[in-house]
Image (cartoon, rainbow, N blue to C red; front, side):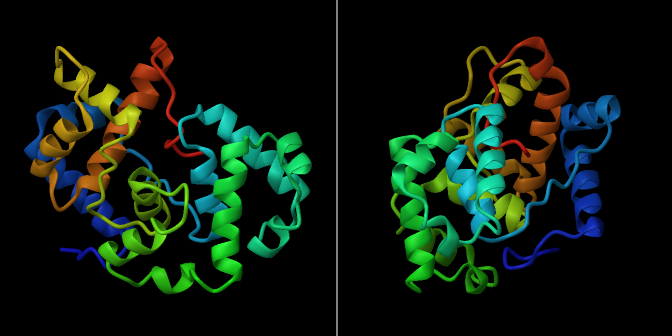
Length: 222
């Protein structure tokens, strides 16, 4: 079994899928209908964390469009290059005033040496969460998505994610959409593979619910 300091591999991912589908018949039905979910990996580092910040509380399409425009302007996309852009340039790319402030805070923390994303990769999740949340604009959802997709930690569950709540409500036939606290409580039964359970739910959302007109979620892979 992986510890929370280890990253998922193809082998451990396959094992986790087998274990979760044996525990949960609804998960088994998702895989039978749509196949296995992707691992959905993002490269750890500044561009990915910045992209997750841009995805806060906006649609997937909107966040991706801003990220694509930014990457076309800032080559390579490093903290040092990013902070050379002024407000006018960032607004033209599609940054809101709030996202400008958050993104600059992240870039400044890295360039000043306050935050070392490479060192964080091998640290305990509690330390990673504490260090990242020191940066203005980074909360638990942003940390969860970074841990899950960039660092590939096996037991992270973003309880505040809208798509997960929508997917779980529909998959389980719940009368109302679960709150973050209810979602977290339900996810306890999926330990130590909650990050894989999240992938199954996102997979269900993308293949079934999204095409039926439900809300989008910026946490989904771009």
